[in-house]
Amino acid sequence: MSDITTVIEVAGALSAAGGLGYAKVRAPRVFWSLAGLPVARVRFAATYHSTMDVCGLTVQPSRLRAFMVRNVARRQDVQPVPPKVRKVRGSSTGMRATLRLPAGLEPADVAAASERLRHAWGVHSVHVVETKPGFVELRMTGYDVLRHVKMPRRLPRKLASGPLVVPVALREDGSAFVRDYTKIPHGLTLGANQSGKSMYQRNLIAGLAKLPVGLVGIDCKRGVEQRGYAPRLSALAVTPDEASSLLEALVGEMEDRFDVLSDHSVSDLWDLPAKVRPVPLVVLVDEVAELFLTAAKKDEERRDRMVMHMIRLAQMARAVGIYLEVCGQRFGSELGKGATMLRAQLTGRVVHRVNDKQTADMGLGDIAPEAVFAVTTIPPDRPGVAVAGDASGGWSRIRTPELTAADAVAICHEHAHLTPAVPALAPFRPAVPVTTAPASPSPLVKPRPVTE
Image (cartoon, rainbow, N blue to C red; front, side, top):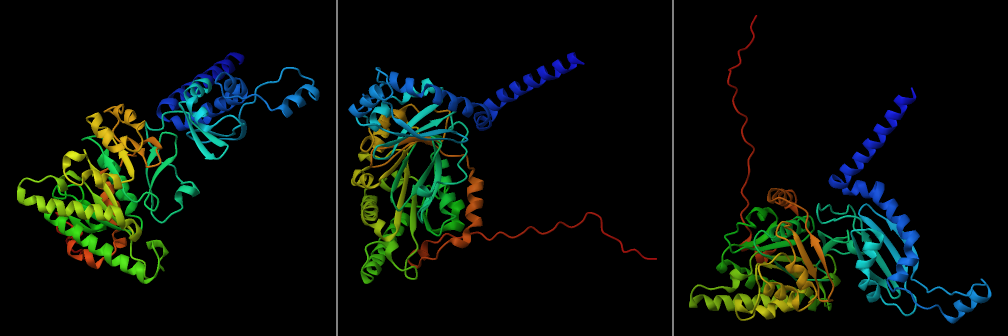
């Protein structure tokens, strides 16, 4: 009987070990919650003081502290003081610790030692975020969260507060990357072919389709990318001529909205009463180079007119609720007059894998020079990975979850009832094909009535 019990115990232990090994590869969230997080919490608590000391993140104690140690605690050796741990909490992706910095340390000191902290505590990555003066948060991830992207179920209150907040991707620290048009009104997305740029657009459009906002599409590739979103689009231009007319109509709509703001003595769309507030508009430009490039000299006038309209929208349209989302493979001065001026107005930058370093410089070199190297190291076998930056100089790696074109089209069809009717854009409203249910096929065998 004892032999059978021993065999069962050994088999159970082997099964548990095998299950953890399988979960580590196939279900990293489960493995981290069951095994990784408890081990990391113990290692963090046991080695915190010594790790901070060897990483140079301690300071000499104050005179009062040294006096209390020598005269009250009766100890002659006064230890250096590390940052005080205020809070430690775990999650399904990692662990977060809030630290109170002592006098003499700054967040940059902790950020410089993040790689050493990562190795000391055996986690995948450590990111340092300043929460408020004197406090930093160590955001530790237990595994590569960008390998299989799974968006958080709920957004933090700070991120979710706003009328135009769209979660688009996942950051490498496990938090959600959101597109908040009230804070960053205009954005530029760059990336080579097969880099995941279209996936980013799908997630963005799918998120915007669920909000009370008007979507305006400009896809000069005959609408191959945006035609499927027609039920949710208030306007669509598929040729350069149509794009020129649509941009002119948007400028006219912008001027009319400024008249409304002036009549109510306010300077922002969101300060208007809800009854008279126009619906926000997001202009989605699929390939911006198609608006700049010309094949003949006669087209240059049209090109200059479109560029002027886009620059005017980028400079002033934020106040009236018109936002630009520009995408392209490359966006530099070689496109022509006005390209760099327009790019300077596009605050939010998302750069996927590119073909050359110059394109990375165009996207991030003027706002976050340190992020240019991160763009050039994106591997080609991980589409959807990108580097997001903004005018504050901050940047982070992100990756969009997989979303097929059929799923994005289905979401647009499902929320077609939210499409606003904008009178100025009525001539550009795309035609939506009416789908009828297929007729039920006739039976192969003709039924015979039963008679007695």
